[in-house]
Length: 148
Image (cartoon, rainbow, N blue to C red; front, side, top):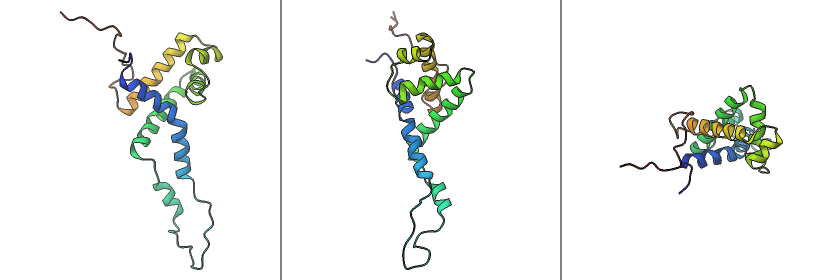
């Protein structure tokens, strides 16, 4: 049995997949640059490329994950130490080169501070996705309570 609830690892996965989702969303919203060749006028396409681009979206589950992480990152960036927190996120989740304690040393913050920042981000993502009731929700004690 894991020491963390199911939503913790799911939220971490959403954060890891964010750059991939952002790139996919950017590709969907980029207008096609392929020239239309053909004998018929108008090239056989709809001719309404702006509307076609605006209507393309990620599948609903992927869009919800993307939105949850984007909102959490926006809130994180607005904090006084937001740049440091985002750098930690990039080092740990997106570059994949550092574990949390090594990223903390790289950005010159304490390991416990990095753990706290990481936990707050994960809880905010989980809250934004609707997995928990409050972003301030604490993990249950890891030792089971005995009930008599």
